[in-house]
Amino acid sequence: MNSPSSILVTGGAGFIGSTFILDWLRPGAERSPIVNLDKLTYAGNPETLASIETSPLYTFAHGDICDADLVRSLLARHQPRAIVHFAAESHVDRSIVGPDAFLRTNIDGTFTLLQAARAYFQGLEGDKRKQFRFLHVSTDEVFGSLEANDPAFCETTPYSPKSPYAASKAASDHLVRAWAHTYGLPALITNCSNNYGPHQFPEKLIPLVLTYALRGKSLPIYGDGQQVRDWLYVGDHASAIRAVLDRGRLGETYNIGGNNQRSNLEVVLAICALLDELVPKSAYRPHRQLLTYVQDRPGHDRRYAINARKIERELGWRPAESFETGLRKTVQWYLDNTEWVERVTSGAYRDWEQTNYTDRGGARGSARDQMKADPEVTR
Ligand code: NAD
Ligand code: DAU
Image (cartoon, rainbow, N blue to C red; front, top):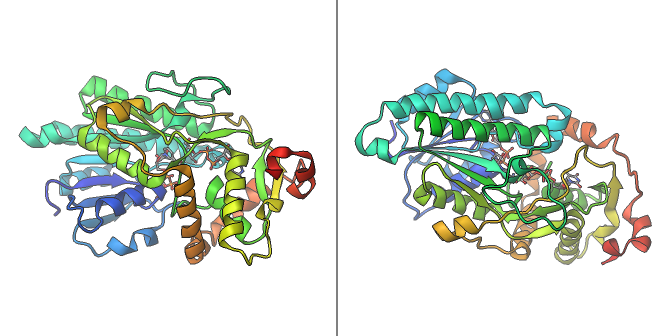
């Protein structure tokens, strides 16, 4: 049995959860033990956590957050002082093709965790009861889509989710708030912007473009490539979650963002420029010639932007990385870890690439044709 001060993390074999765990247990950090409950879907890679696998502070529980008996027994056995809930289906394009798993994990799974946490919390007394926290990790996509000149999302922006993924995360946020309000569950919610960094599954824009460019594959830009996202380095997301867990006010929501708004085209061009510099002998230089405009994502949100002043003001959190430093680290990590990419993308991922990209075509032509006509591409 772990010590009473352990924390239960869900989805800790995924991109952000694994970053959080590795940081929590890094040498010298002197933090409490972690129990990681993860179903190991295609997005979960225990290999990412190999360096702490045998640590006495780490316990892995292979299972589903929808399994109420399993969640109850983990809480009873490990007596955690907090639950940090990352587990989710997280890819918007997959939610469009097959929303079922999103409703099941993101809504039913969160409901199951909340019920188990509520029963567990009711049985706690004294300091253990005062200490307990349920931290729900959510997304800025619950707020919907911004026009070019709209102010950034703040914590009071009304919810307006537009994709099945965003709707399922919005539903889970509402459940957490309801459990806090009705049953007094000591909950906290974080809504974060787009993350990037090492160990991100290569179905998401930045690792997808990076890994495709290294192989000379065309780089699929949905629609006109002018959609804007607010990028945050994943290590900064992990430090923000720690700040909210340590010092966040109960029942509050904290928006987390990098103040790094970039169009998709700008992001892809920045990756291509870094690859030109870091892989000077590449046969595919200049890598931007690989850009290809393809059919847009249905219902594609135009712009996200986060106002993170509340977490800065109340908890003193600020991102450590700029987009330039974070992206350089990320590109270098993928260059140094091509075997990781090979392993996680073998098997079923190939079917997903087929499903998502085969019918999209190169609707607006490749960058080789576009470069002359489009000043954004030639920049
Ligand atoms: P990810 O897809 O990389 O990882 C998800 C993890 O959850 C995987 O390890 C998977 O095996 C596990 N999982 C899925 N279904 C499960 C289930 N039913 N039971 C137990 N485990 C299950 O996701 P991520 O990018 O690391 O995102 C983590 C959380 O952060 C999600 O809740 C997501 O909505 C949120 N978020 C992500 C971003 C981003 O840019 N990636 C931004 C803001 C918020
Ligand atoms: O905003 C936070 C969200 O960011 C998280 O909640 C999600 O879990 C995470 O996946 C991410 O969602 P996005 O849809 O913004 O991320 P994605 O990497 O899929 O796409 C980023 C942008 O790039 C988006 O405008 C779509 C575009 N895109 C994406 C892919 C995969 C392309 O143009 N081509 C592509 O092949």
